Length: 311
Image (cartoon, rainbow, N blue to C red):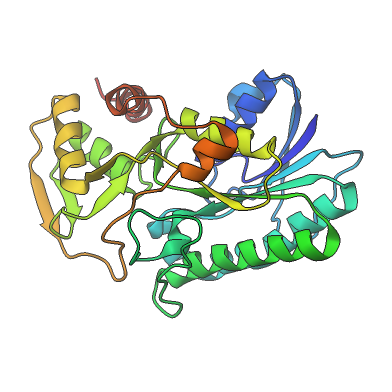
């Protein structure tokens, strides 16, 4: 197949590109490099991969046939969407509109990278796809949460009114190689601080929970969803829930660091809990994560050691 991926130079987009190439497909990767990095896709040179630097909030032109459009373009870390709130809103709205327009024009499937953040600070636990969420639209995190909720609404409108075969993946916390050292999310923060021997910073008291999925498992779920018949949103994430504090101590142990844990104020509207109900993924896709946490962290820590030049 001939496949377009927006956000192809990002953490997940680069892994998605690589896996699709490994499966024999042709990939056109589009990214404006706001948060993406060419280093993530440098190893794809010489393969059936074409990179186009382009801002997808503008019209997207691709010559020739396209079978699938994966729309992955967006800042995804709180430090990014708080620094670039308007570009985040624009890529969720205008970028999704342009990517859907490409899929419609080419008769292609459209796969949207949505997020567990559509559930906000949830009042339902674990979160099922039928839950409508608890999002503060005027809070600082609303620029990301509402951009993704709008993107889902637009995707379903194109499905209902234009017949576009739409897939919506709600991604829960994911980690792995090619995350940025300064990404700002829990795993890269904890790993980079521990490798430097710095204090490991927890926001809040550390009792808030997350569910961490290794990137290879996530990509497998995404591709199973792309090949499925469903047009309903599907949670893809690891249902194993753990506290942020437990993750910090695990990473300190696994890096052999002497770092200590310090606590700072919890950011506004930061979710207290996060755990996917993956019944729909298990039932419709035959998917569930298989990579154990410590195995995934071993690969991630090794990547960060190399990236940071730390022995």
